[in-house]
Length: 200
Ligand code: IMP
Image 1 (cartoon, rainbow, N blue to C red):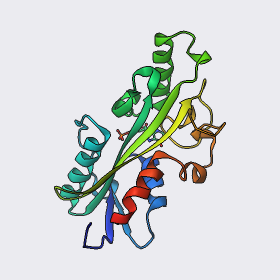
Image 2 (tube, rainbow, N blue to C red):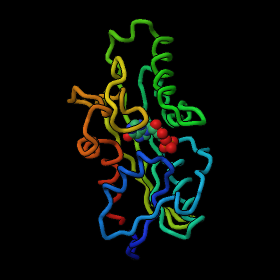
Image 3 (cartoon, rainbow, N blue to C red):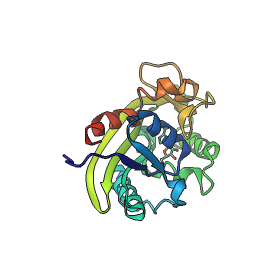
């Protein structure tokens, strides 16, 4: 466990949806910095797992700024698509981060696998690896998951990314239809945060 108290923390993401969500989870006594203050682009995600990519980001952003960095790597796994898009979740949206495009690709791939996919329950889960690094040193890396299924069509305008097509277990609504305050208390990022907060 870290002996030094973290009182300044960089959130290592250029994704506004993630930034909003992570900010809402952090204790108020920590001064939060974002990558936009430093004009930093994200590093290439060359890892093979969510954990590896999360650590690539937290180490990279910490080295660039000299601050402790909390970074997330997350994505959607769909069992019927052999766990895709998985670590490629952001890449399915293309260079401009177009999630209408990514969602269309999900439905196209489901159709390719089986024209009658809508008759089945398409199990899926969101996964989030959160890590804290200081310069090149890993302080912690944890994983959180939320199980659910894929909606037959996109629903709801809240959230970001794949939220309109993901229905968490024991819910009838997609994340896109839920109030952010509700989503933030049951999703993969929240579960990962509960495991990492003792390091802050
Ligand atoms: P990365 O972690 O930068 O590789 O991006 C992960 C991608 O997964 C994001 O761009 C989102 O599209 C998707 N994703 C991760 N978490 C969520 C979420 O909570 N809701 C919707 N989409 C998500």
